Image (cartoon, rainbow, N blue to C red):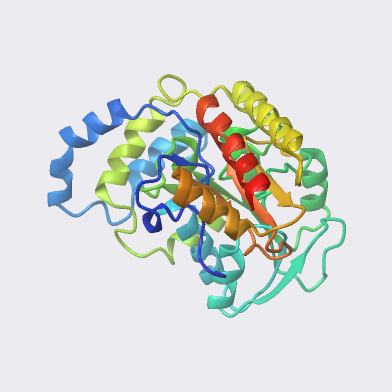
Length: 338
């Protein structure tokens, strides 16, 4: 990873508004906090060597068989497991996107090529990596187009990271549909869906033969006991306490995008999610980030380390309307001061 990830809140004590991580704001975790406190004794024993109880829960949640699910320590472990399982392959990555795909592939001796349009696919590619909805742009690939791409390239393995699937109203692959393809690995993230990035809960859904290959490379106890307990709790409340009003989130993103455009001096990329990529017409995103963090306790994501982007780019995920208004006003202050 070039110069690390976003959400580096640990480097900025006192942050009160965190726009740098693609998780929704204002999520109430009181119930989860109580549940984990009441079940804290689970840390006194080893967790399941393979998190099969969580995989059964995830399978029930998606209407698939447990053989279609591989639970992991966040979606990032899934990325590295896939790169390890297909070591020494040729991988193409649809960019700009999350840098861990390339990092994981290089670690496991893949030949890595970047692809900036899905219209052309190198014949030598064994794996095709894409994020959908994409990070950092928020763009969703049309599902019909994606199906056609997969079906016309049956010898390529498509790794589709749907970590942000809960944040869009655009059609996406269901776990059940993806599991019918012999050449699709679908990545998911409870971390993002339920706004618990510190717990690290991810998983892959796919055809059983593909899942078997990943499980054979997964190290024991990779998913800790608290994460497993939290997974059970959260999945039972996905449609209740944790139901997302996607329409409201997208409406707020549109409002914030228009407010930023009215400030001037920046361009906002179209997005199908509550997060968005922004390009300064002058100045550096790193300078804006430092100003917001040190003067206003606001954290944004400097996006200059995504391949294909430069020092002008930053990313934000909308939070509460009050926080969003404060962010816009503080960016305006920076624009007119520096």
